[in-house]
View 1 (tube, rainbow, N blue to C red):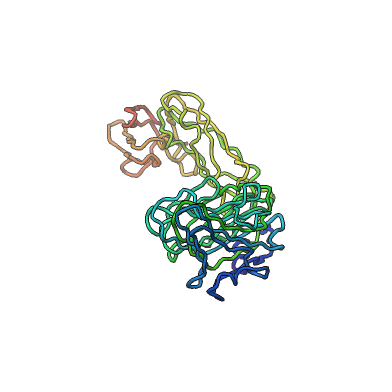
View 2: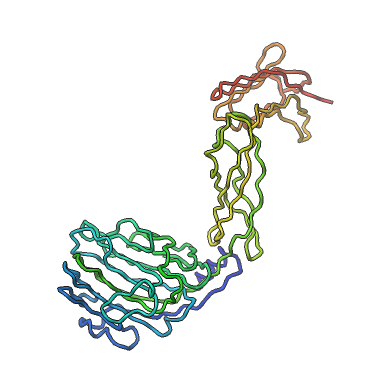
Length: 423
């Protein structure tokens, strides 16, 4: 806990609200090989564990096992807690699962529901009772399965894994310390699902939608669908109220300058600001990274004009942008590159170097400077390098010098005169 608090204070500033952690249900199935002993009204007991048709439920090898055979039969299980039924919760539901005996794909297999007012009989709950649903669907290859939460589907997993499901019904976006040690955010009435293996921690479902957001997180129920074949083993089932961190929300962002670029500049070379300042609802400010590109399809560097471009905020870790605030700026395409025709290399730190800043918009360039006798004094293919005004003897002499600028990618050659001014 100390590590978690320290991590949050480092990443999410000093303003946060932390709720208490409370375990509502914990069962490792180590106390008995008779599954009926796990059914009752006591702590950490199920209200029901059942199977009908030619299906089975048992506790073998210290695991709860549901065997689903073909036909119309189903498996059911569920539990509740008076403390677990309070509104405004942020629940962590974890369990170890293994899928086996699965010969074909199943579109919707073993289902786990969190909500309220569930039926205790064999019927699975209807949507009006469900806040969130997790589906473990066997795949075609033995031991493989996919996961579904809301409309989102995970990659394929196999073997014994631990599923960690964070379900938010707190009324606010919240942060939590994820299995990989990072601090993640999940919005209200959504959930994140992690898959933990011996070698990896994977965010399998990010922001899975709730089925019925108005339902409190009061009960959990398991239900299988009929007409498929597979077995699921469940172990180390734990449901707890998680520590809640109220995360700073971005409420405004600084404006971006209008950008001037020469004709035939590729969008890739437009010098958009990499960072902008944002303000959080806590009153604190920070620099965030920006990603530019929305509206880029309208950009045409071959036609002078003013092009709107939208920048997307990339929130810093431990912060969120729930309102989707973005930044719009404009790229002004000028008809030609701008070339300065005089400079003062006198060492005063002002205008000491002859540099054509517009060249940074192109991949390949060549800049040459010659004296009146045709002797080349400067040559560079680096668009960020300028001429310091020195001749071959290292001296700076006032006067006029000839330049040749080549930009092969736009088939452009510029020739002219640059003057060194000395007092």
